[in-house]
Length: 176
Image 1 (tube, helix red, strand yellow):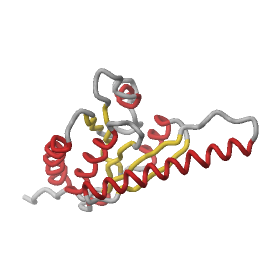
Image 2 (tube, rainbow, N blue to C red; image 1 turned 135 degrees about the vertical axis):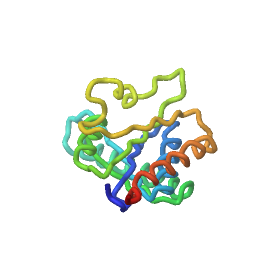
Image 3 (cartoon, helix red, strand yellow; image 1 turned 90 degrees about the vertical axis):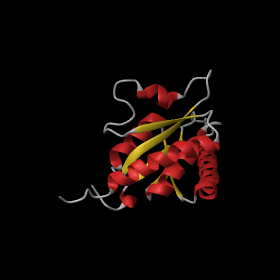
């Protein structure tokens, strides 16, 4: 295993849900204390094609601008709350398919952090996908689901012990 913590990254899925900032802060704290990179995936879902190509292209441009603005805002929040830089990854397509592709292409991603909606609402499409055959990725990648009902103090309380455990795993074992 690599001794360089920067060889590892934690991926958080950026969306406009109420609970997403909780997942971002958890992932940011984990990265801060382990030295891992924080990566933030934002997938732009394709829109229905308009009757004219120029309108379709304008819709795509607006969606991309909106996604860039959203990731910049969340990157600023990660920096303010955790002191880490979130690297935005923008992709166009269907969320689950793009996540699977990214995880297949980028072996540095060692952990995916998702936010769960607060009951009684549905936990979300990715969390629902976890229990299905094939999961989220063609390769085994651990997933942490952060409940949306946690306070920032509760998030810190669970992120810090996890960071300590992960940090000791990347150190080289003592020689005999």
